[in-house]
Image (cartoon, rainbow over all chains, first blue to last red; front, side):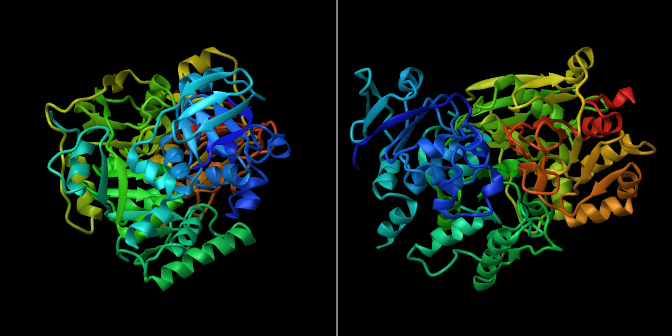
Length: 164
Length: 422
């Protein structure tokens, strides 16, 4: 898996799936359409400013609330290369892994990295580097089983490979 | 070391003599659930799998309930996709308009969820069935697709928090107040990745509908599942509804818990969650002592509080009374059966005479879909489960979560009110 590198969008605690992708847009399941409204109710400007490769950094319980897979789908389709948080809500955590959106838990990085910093993540080691400040952080590695799903770029490919 | 109730169910489903917290397991599923928002994504994902069809046509439930009856063309297309998938795969438990209800009220009523089951659903409130002593948890669409194809799902075995309930709740204190109190105490991530196991003599004082409400909102504390022991109340419910045999699991006496909380139900007060997080709880007494909170709309319904006991409670408050001028009261029985029962008991007459409207079953307003979307600056008292920013409509609207009794009383006065005040 390639390293991620991009500019940081910083958010606080309990970013819920209703602000990530409001339910008024759930009459679509098209990733490109969902990406147009990503983070709309927490940061109206996000979709105008986000560039391919950018990174979301948030505090605890990111993705709490509904099970809508549309949330990680919209983030991935908006071009975000990784979400770093202190903790993730468990359904969001599963969904991100299952659809191949890289996520990483790291309380120190989540607290210290600032909005607008440039950050690089080496997925093979879990090392997060804040290029702007020069500081590095050790993110939590996935259990081998989940790493296999991530390496397959999602659960569907993982199952297909298992059955092949 | 002993196992918790959840761990025992998971061990059995994974064909293992025992499991421990943190272990990754592959478990057999008894039921896989989806709705009109999550199923189309799952159906598309399943299309990418090298599979010939579903693992068991009797163990999948498809319930269009969020934007149904179809709220717009795009929603109609989604429902059509689910309907055609159900037909193509001869899914036994597909529920069309006229038969459907809000999924988490409907499936127990149909007897499709029983103790000892392992259930996943592409809806976060799938944790509701823990009220019946099942392990059930919310997942996303891809997990649902994998579940429909293989009949299995992977889980990380959770540790647990134990809630020992004692005492008897007072007249206007319901399951909703119990769970809001707990969420206020431990926070919206207080049970993150973990089970919430409810136990103690106070459980016997809670009816099934109260237990469904409590298990339903385990997710609002970040919990993986919420689970109740199976007692005489559960067995009586199952005798009326269950369609198959079931196995009762109990936590081992030496089961290990991360934390134990003892909650005296008799000391609880009607509890309300303020915007914009379910953990922002205040008792009705704190509200009475403060500045009055004027409201615009009241919603009584949802997978949390749209069951018959909820409607009976609201009707008791509203009987012979009328909503305050300018207040919009929307009542949504959660299933067709509940709707009919409410009609036969005269509850619908009470709601209508009080100036409310009664809707066909739908999740609609809870997630700002339709049937009660809020405008800028509006306030709603709702018996639903989430009060996040913009959840029920405009990003500048506000939601106060409450029990059916408080919601009904608030509709009468036009401000958040104690039912005993009327």
